Image 1: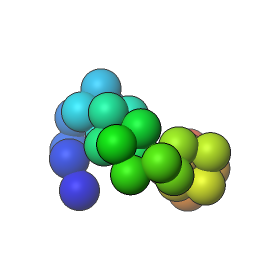
Image 2: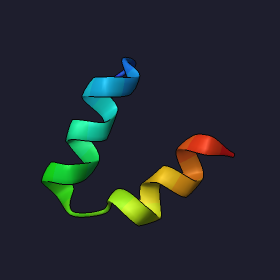
Image 3: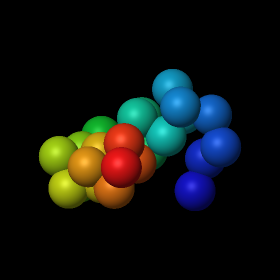
Length: 27
């Protein structure tokens, strides 16, 4: 996974799991 927050958000958008993964990322 990308270490950079912005790159990570782009990764989530590309994988179409933004809502699901964002929760894990922010916990």
